[in-house]
Amino acid sequence: MQKPNDARVKANETQSAINTKDVAMIARPFLWKNTVRVIVYDIRDINNIKQIRKVEVDGNAMATRKIGDMLYLVSNDYLNYYSENIAKITPSYVDTAVGDGYINIDYADIHYLKNSIKSSYMILTAMNLENVKTPATIYTCLGGGGNIYMSKENLYISAEDNNRYINNTLMPEKVAAVDKTNIYKFQLKDGKFEFMAKGQVNGTVLNQFSMDENNNYFRIATTTNSAWNANGEVGSKNNVYILDAELKLKGKLEDMAIGEKIYSVRFMGDKGYVVTYKNIDPLFVIDLKDASNPSILGQLKIPGYSSYLQPYDENHIIGIGKDTQEVDGRVTESGVKLSLFDVADYKNPKEKFSTVIGDAGTSSEAIYNHKALLFSKDMNILAFPISVMINGGNVENKGIYSKQVFQGAYVYNIDLVNGFKLRGTITHLLPTDVNIDGYVSGYDRNIQRILFIDEMLYTISNDVIMANDFNDLFFKNKIIIGK
Image 1 (cartoon, one colour):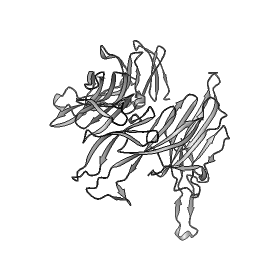
Image 2 (tube, one colour):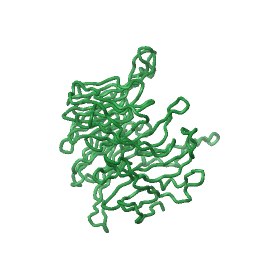
Image 3 (cartoon, helix red, strand yellow):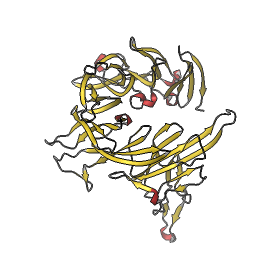
Image 4 (cartoon, helix red, strand yellow):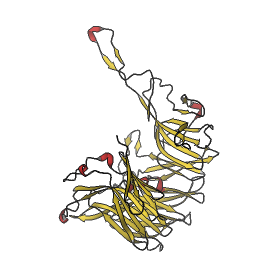
């Protein structure tokens, strides 16, 4: 949400010159400051819901995690250079366990992240959801973060450290300048944060799944995009690093899939799975058992790529991404691809089952946001929102986007015998939302999230919450919320 940065500044406030012969109207800026708000409600009496706690922190939310009764929030707050009170540009927060007013964080309470290149504050917040009278813990650092990984004991925050520029000048030709990633480790103890260590690796991190903690070791997968290699050519490489409890390098596996970049990662115990892509999809199986010597056990090369890897069991992984095909000598993306990988034989991983939905232009939020995916092995369900495009059967133009024929949820059964079996589809769109040319107008009825409670499957869009029977997907009821 947003709050005014200074209550004295009005949107229509102006300043005029005293000399009426040369009147100048200068509009003063209406300054806004983003905040992140956490509200706790008591819903034990459904007819008398009460707000019992609020914590509001300056900045934009980067990530949240819940462990037991504790909620952890990581936010970035960019420095407000345009504040009227430039001498007081520290962030502030509200905690109703303390009071209703904003509390400015004092300079003496602000730490700094060494080597951070971001001109922002990073604010770590811990609040007890059970005891609403316990004040929140606020830990503030000068410097911003990127992706996070959290275990039950530790919080790891990654931040890019770009060394390609010196004094705002791009480094000269044939200098092997590479991006680096700083890792900051904080221990979680009694609802408080304690800085433990800082480490650094080559390359940049794709997302939270590129990081992991196991047996007191921190594992991280990165892509190195060199400005130039020894021959003055641009190139990319992929790496896996293992750091000890003090974030010192223990082992490394570098220069994987030269010329490609990482599209997805999943760490599972003493194994790691990395998908890289440029023209074809290599799935690498990595042995992490010996922390000092990680190695590639096997790899699988197939068309397409998986941009998200979802564990099915210890020997099988679901891949969600895009199919690819060669058109006129070049590789193009087509429909959304589901794969079930068998990694029981680590040296020879196999694609056990696969299915492709739609043609070029077909998309799903689950490709880049795991929160859009519903998966339960026990309930035998895999579901996700999707917009399906078809090219009208024109085989010669497989790579050309065509018209949209569906937006909603695809619901699959998935098992190791039959693979992916489409149980059915659900849509919130009205018949008038899609015209004959595939133009969709009902965007607020695009399904975004799917969940189930007991025997009911719920789909959610901006305008509608719909309930369908979990087993046969028969419509039960819906609520129109967009009016």
